[in-house]
Image (tube, rainbow, N blue to C red; front, side, top):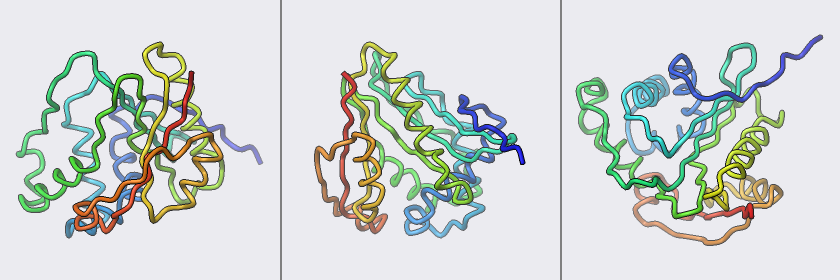
Length: 206
């Protein structure tokens, strides 16, 4: 039996729906603790974010594809050369979710947001579909981020946050040469996401 190869490709609008569904697997626990959105509504919210959020030139999302199916995704960002406030998408494209859910989602996304410093390539998220975990796809995506950052003269480290409730993920990143630089506690994060403790991890590139 021939196994179809996995490719890592830039995000494209044709993948918005699949990637929105994929992100539910990574963030279901956080955002369903925050809102009353079910899996389908949460996937649609992420899809609409891809559809209508302004493109940020200081960021990149990649998808892992096999047989045309999105089975993994990674998003990175870095410090923009021109400081500008990120615009929120228009309310009219999200009114189906209700004002209260929408407000809580944007508050939650804002709280999870991290503004990279000079030289920092921040991994916003990395998600692999549960049916494809354990196949090295996460490593492929992280290797792509490593290779990308190494080609950028202005970047000298990769960074990410890991929830304290996920020690296995922290151990995985440690095996990939990430080091825990800081441990943080957030009362607001605990109230919103039931996630109080976070580890900020860094991998030096140069």
